[in-house]
Image (tube, rainbow, N blue to C red; front, side, top):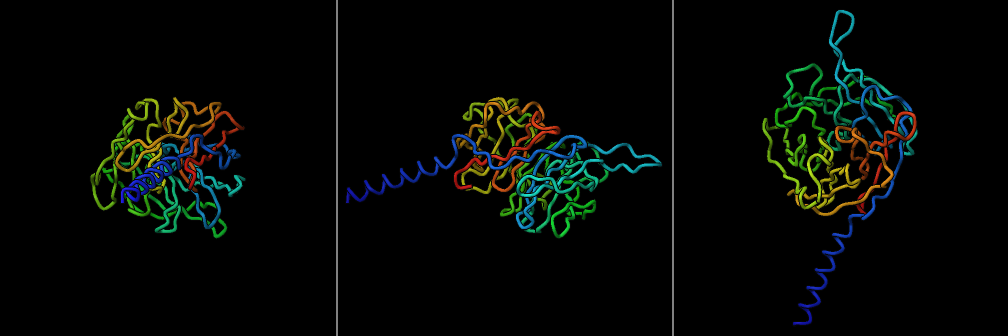
Length: 291
């Protein structure tokens, strides 16, 4: 009996070590997407639609002031690339994109705009919208409404991630370790998550300001880009630090990645390498062995 208990204890300990070891000590490069179309403003986040085998990269930028000759519609584009990182096309749906993602519940490519919380005052074309695509995955200029403003998102610059299983959003707040959990049926956060940055060995001003990624991997659900230390920090949904994955030391993230240039799509965390190529290059990194 004692031997059986000992074997059980050793087995459970071994499983625990295996689970922890799933986080890659060094992130593995999965894809590079050189931008072939100049960003209209700042390149923001990345989405992937698996059925179409397309990546989508959205620019973000405020709309111009309206006048008698021009409507107050953002000039920001959304760009499509194929699974090999080759450019397909660009379109202007007219939104100041902050986050784009594939919603597997609606089977739509969706965008969340700047100021979805209305914290900065009401503006046109604010909320969540579904971007129209052709049958072969080209992005179009047209879209449909999904949801209007919701104050539960907090900071107007937040770049939320979507959890299709729970159908909630994770909205990181500026210069903070706070992540708001947003249910669109509620007008205030359903809950919040405090990321343990101290245990991770970093601080608010060293990590990505507005973006935390949702992975769908149990106990490794949230990823945060540590810009100063060039690594990806892994947390669970309680905010507990689970480990980190190092990025290449020669990767020049620069200040852009504090505000934008990040994303999570197709099982990879994307970062924007501004100095590579004419308009910069997106790198997609695998963080977990099972991803």
